[in-house]
Image 1 (tube, rainbow, N blue to C red):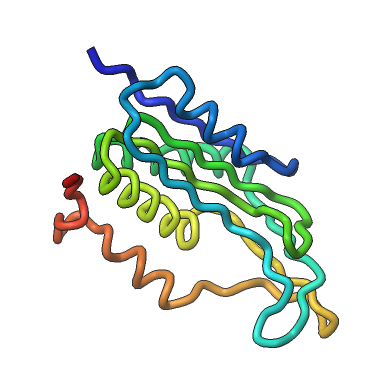
Image 2 (cartoon, one colour):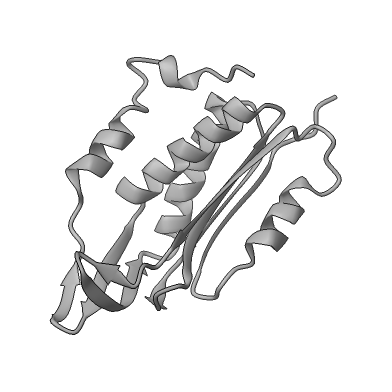
Length: 166
């Protein structure tokens, strides 16, 4: 009998430990054949101008529920053994981790596809607002058409992105 998928979603201001999170995701499981991780890190410059910090805001409760629903969708679309999504909020300095996605599956294609799906969702649809702080001032980051285009490939109409071949 297959073990249930282990799903973890956290929205927090504190730094996280990617190694500890991925170890917890795979600990005691012999059905994991692939683990894909992505960590988003605050860059120190944008368009050649230094960044002092990013400030991320969210709606507590709503952000977690929204992320959980998309992780559940990923688990329905691909045969995952587990997933972790952690997203930070507050003031984040260059070089600090902002978010992580880890997906585990028996096969690599499913783990990669689910991670890609979740990263596109977090970039375009998760209820977070990002302000960039530079010497020239602060500004809220606008949505980017390229990010929306990347996320649009996951709509169900085509269906081809759901394949989880080995």
